[in-house]
Length: 88
Image (tube, rainbow, N blue to C red; front, side, top):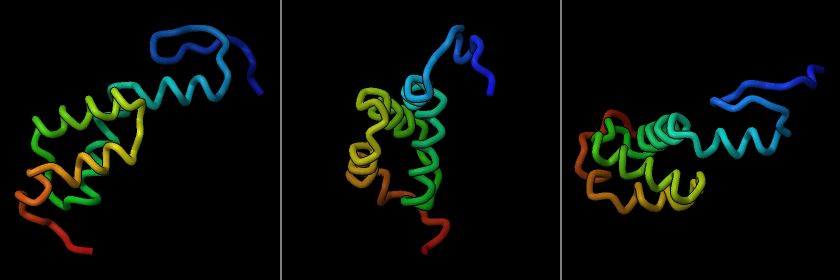
């Protein structure tokens, strides 16, 4: 296994697995992607951009707490307003 310095998300150096996961969990791209995926899975309609930004901020503020993000999704007025693409 490779154990030298690693360049990841703008930082270079040796990092353990948990610290890499923590940094990835709060990265803006991770927040944006996972909020979009959670919304699509539960709401079944496209996420409004303003709501996506709000939920991304919730993700980052809570350091990726999925429970809090899901609660915010279900409480969102946009959650029930959109046309559903599928029902499962």
